Amino acid sequence: MDESRLIKDPNEPAPASFADAYAELQAIAARLKPEPGQIPDVDAIEPLVRRANLLAAHCQQRIEAVRKLIGEQSAS
Image (tube, rainbow, N blue to C red; front, side, top):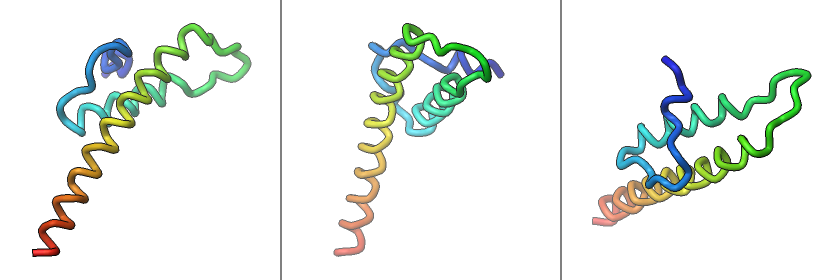
């Protein structure tokens, strides 16, 4: 599967599901791996980093929501 198709525009909202957001983060990480002897294209990297920041924040919010639910259930 072409992982680059998973990567959306930085201005699009994060996917609703954690799994989709995490898969997109993995695709971005793969794209950002430096190629030996190749000069990084900063113009191509910048939108990927912006998108990754959005996705990482979304994933963190989902994880925190689950932690909160677990905490509420154990307190009951």
